[in-house]
Image 1 (tube, one colour):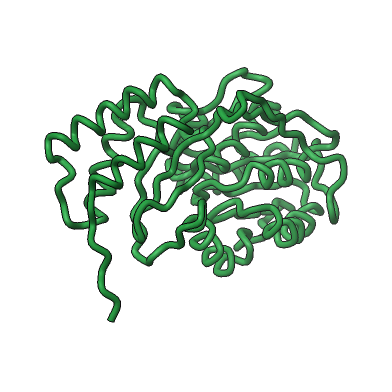
Image 2 (image 1 turned 135 degrees about the horizontal axis):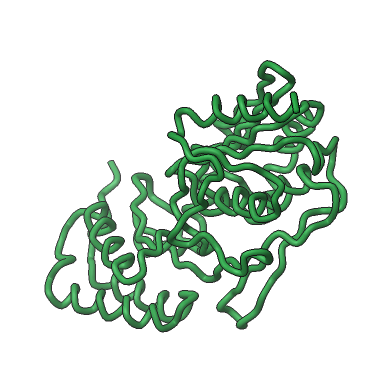
Length: 301
């Protein structure tokens, strides 16, 4: 039997403070958050023996200043490797294998309307390009397309661009990322060529969202909405626009620190805090039926 690793809250908090100070995309906010953590540590608020409870307490304090939902101390039930980002990659790989590479459903509805569900994540492109290309190529023959992101929790911005490339006709500026490291900006564009067939930029396109839709999945919905390419149907999304990195602080604890922020070339802002606002608001459970009806109406017209 493996002996549980003893939890020492102070070193976890000290390392979280260091990471915030060095990497958080908003240095001024980092200073405020570290002040909260130091005060709470001195008060004994983190004097707990359970790693999951510590993660809950610290996450609440990390998000108390600006409600950045990417800023977290995450608990992992299984021990995690010490390499930077290892915890996230290990968990993603298990989900990738269990979800047909992130495209668990391709379905043809009445009237020539296809549904492609992308869930539970937009996995790293070097993993996901083949299954996503297969799903989108199969759906490319449809008269209208519904992309279901209602249970998608985020993922890789490069995969966002890959999916958009199948849904547009021309190379298009999708998003710009500002990175604190080096004070630099990096543009994201759709690709001029895709493997397989392209659904293209003219046929009716609908994107389904819920209050679970998060991060890179929000970017996919937001980019297509801002370009006027898709109609978003469903609920407002969670509101996380800051890409983050993960650091292992304890065998069961990972700090995720946002290191950049998105800047959309159309709106010149992003969906942080507000979420993506649907063009056709409705309960997430009704979104597929609503989008199907909209698609059929559009095709008749």
